[in-house]
Length: 134
Ligand code: NI
Image 1 (cartoon, rainbow, N blue to C red):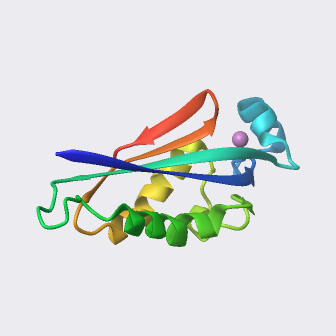
Image 2 (cartoon, rainbow, N blue to C red):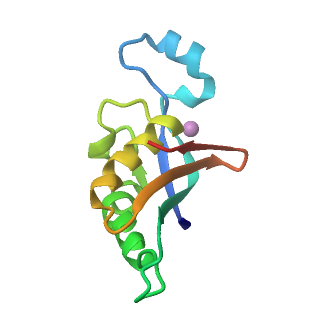
């Protein structure tokens, strides 16, 4: 079994905010991440697929196609956007790294052909990343 990873980069703004809570409770739970006027991250996204090599191509899958899928379904919708306000697939979701990684998985999964989606890894800061395996 082979595992191939495509790395992508984007910038986005968000705040961690549960609309069912008061502003005070949001501040208490999320601290600076609940700053009402947003903050930004330089996200790094790693999408890993797995499969066996097709003997005719020597590829598991053409990673250019995976890159196009990520661009069309994710990057075009989130890059330089506000995750709380602008992104249809994050509507009504607290845009934590965990929820965001799962939402990216759910968006990509139906489009992955000829191989399997294995992991969505989302790095939010230099020191924190989350991995979702479905
Ligand atoms: Ni944040």
